Length: 201
Image (tube, rainbow, N blue to C red):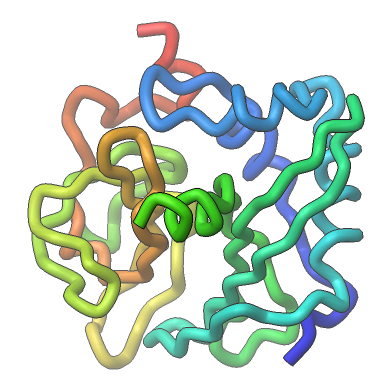
């Protein structure tokens, strides 16, 4: 399967998260290394779309909220540096549009060589601690991650959901979609509007 055209990238996914410095598990330095900054977010948006549209899907995962796609791709950044990335996309149940969720460095070649509830509001890009294991993704209770997408109400779980980018030792280990009750927003960042505020604290 190839990714279609008409993919959607929300501005805030770039300007409030990926291009904002974070005190740990930061992706902005990776993107800055290829010339991307807050001022050039539109260039990043267009480069992602050009790289992904028509590209072969690496993995498709059915979730209670729809279908999640993983697309591994690469492109040349603004300063000529070549980027290899994993991009994650979501098509909600009943929706036509496929939305961008997040991206992170694709280190697969390096690895192979080395052998509170549904009423919570404005939690996007907040840190959470996992309250349940997600065995199929290798995620364990106590793992920490960032909420990179908010998902609609699920009949199966009778609550809304999050897509969470889970980190260990500064590396992305999984991107999972789970009910809100499976993750607890960390109190030290609760109430912050975006990760730029966290970095400044």
